[in-house]
Length: 213
Image (cartoon, rainbow, N blue to C red; front, side, top):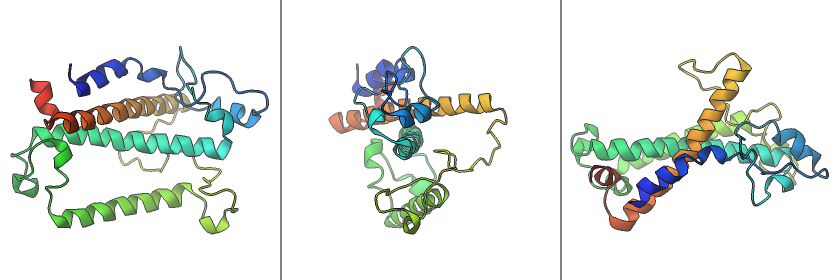
């Protein structure tokens, strides 16, 4: 079975096991981790917290929040990447973008786009990151030198206030369920995107071609 397909298939059933941190309760000597991590979304039965390397036991509140912010951000990018892989290869040669000149495996598409696209891409990424930094992080000039990258105390990791379709539930339990779904889909997408990249790099064929064969 092809690497990309097997990566998704084998990991899909186990993605729910990826809790944010630790498979066991933190030691009594780390109460800050226990009080904060126990309420984090994403730890599902039967595994619960899943942290074989013990990162959570060595972290404080601020570090745990940065871990969650990083996980959500990478998950969101990975979900977009998976869609980009599939849609980009499916419509190649028939898309109105770039005069339908972009073709081949998705990992080669970025090198085929016009130079002007790079400027737009960098500006878009820069604007998005600037907005995220101002929303979630304390101004570096106000942060103690021993606490770099400090998140705002009131900031909920991943909650940028961007909800143009009004999908955020008012009920806390429904919101928590939606957060869990986003985490699980993001975790699976990271595995899928890694599989897609590895498969196309290994044999030079597009993912759509593998699915169709």
